[in-house]
Length: 76
Image (tube, rainbow, N blue to C red; front, side):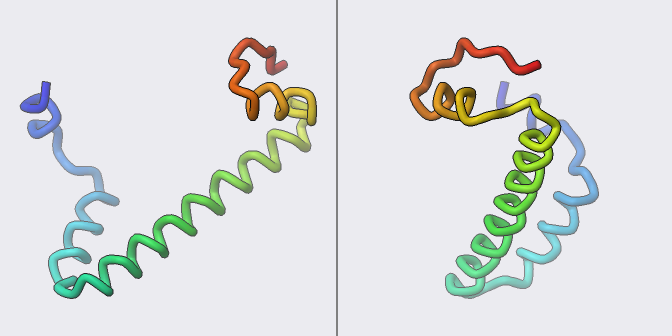
C-alpha cells in the first residue's frame, strides 16, 4: 500500500511546501512553519464550523453528542 502512495504525483500545494522546506535548515524554522500551518488549518475549521452552525446543521445538543463521543446523531 505504501508503494501506491509513492506513485501519486504531488499536487501544487505539496510541491510548493517541498520547495519551501528544502531551504529550511533549522529546527526552530520548522517549528515556526508547523505553527503557522496549524493556525491556518485551525482557522479554516473554525470558519467552516461557524458556517455549519449558522446554517442550522449544528446546535448545542449535537455538539454535546460529539463531545461525549456519541457518533449516532443526525445532521440535517
